[in-house]
Image (tube, rainbow over all chains, first blue to last red; front, side, top):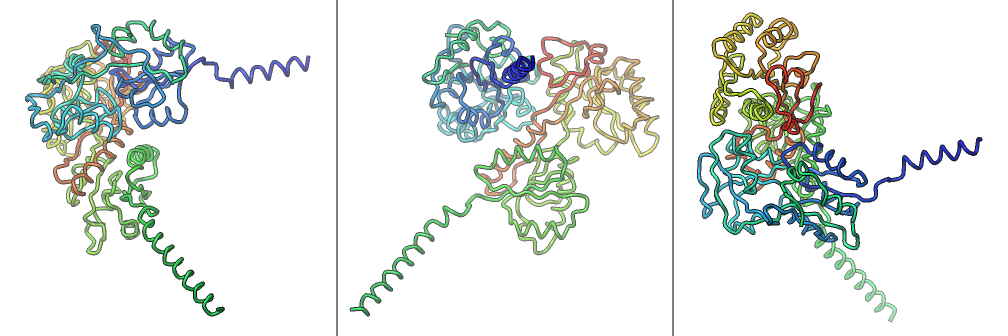
Length: 231
Length: 332
């Protein structure tokens, strides 16, 4: 009886201390809802996957380096910077894995030719230097950047004239028009098409469970991620 | 032969010493910390510690972070000596006490770092507090009403076009900017200014009647002014009036939205992590601006923390459940 209770006790301890998850997934993907909402929804949809959500590039890159997960969800240009990961699924909108980006300003047009004399609000996906390098790809004479970590924090940059415009996907224009009554002006950018969400898997791994879970994500979560499906 | 070998040994030794000295001179810049020092002056409390940690994390790669914890007992001269010892390239001043100490430091004739740029944060009315300090800027702690109104409008079923605010006269100047920001959002911010330092209960009641009945406001925004938010005024004036007319109220302090007090349906507070990031970003901007704060105005907090008193909010304005995900903390 005593031996049985000892075995039971040890088994209980083991059950609580051992990682019960089959795979781990890191998410670094600022969305318009609070991050804990996305995290909870993803956990409900992927119960056998340990999911960790990151709000800052610094924390995310450190974690990927020190405790690499089986898979990562982020913007494609972020995933391409991760050395040991390979994109297996690309988010799709209207059949495209890339989406056009625009400049959103208030009460004024933005002249692309003189954008280097303006300030531009951006979501900080890549850190200070990384974002400078990314934006330089689109604007050879780049503007001064104002970085935020949340989509909604781009709006006060315009409200308080802290930035002349913000750099967002065309699909995000509707979000800002919904939450604000300011007189928005959209400046289309020719040839600025950026990859939407992507799921990357650690090289040498398969993350089969994560991939299959992603293919079965419901419309509510897909909408939070700004995609219609995966390719 | 013996004498020759001794001379050769001495020559080798001297050459070796010279080589090592040359290596040391070449390596010294690499071994010593070439990063610019940033001094963060802060009180003890955890809120300041949180902001300091974010700043240190953001700046740690490119700056050496030094810290000075102050209290009400910190003596001005000791503070001045510390700044001289650290010789920072920039000072971050958290709280009005730190701002006051630095102002004193700048007044000293021999302050080594008196023209050093400073960035103030986590204080009351930072813009006013730093007036008189040379080469300074900051991030204010007060969340502007327009930010709170936009946040509330997203989840409110009730249409919001008129927002009332009862305030003491000293806020007149601040509200001018706020009125303009709200106008851009097609929202009218209607102030009711309370003169003097007496009869606040009576005047708050008069103000509420004016805003609710005469001006037909949709929402009330209540700034964090302890003189108008004494417990007896909250209990006897604010809550009964708001309850009677079912006016949704935006407050700037979390406790006022609690289900025990039931004053605020919605509380919007500055996000401390966001303030830390803004300050860090400003440090880079000042550095890029050749250590000058010229052209860098005091800015409001970008990132906020939203709390909703759900029962009160449902009663006073109705909630769009689909947007509850924009709220950080729901009180039920």
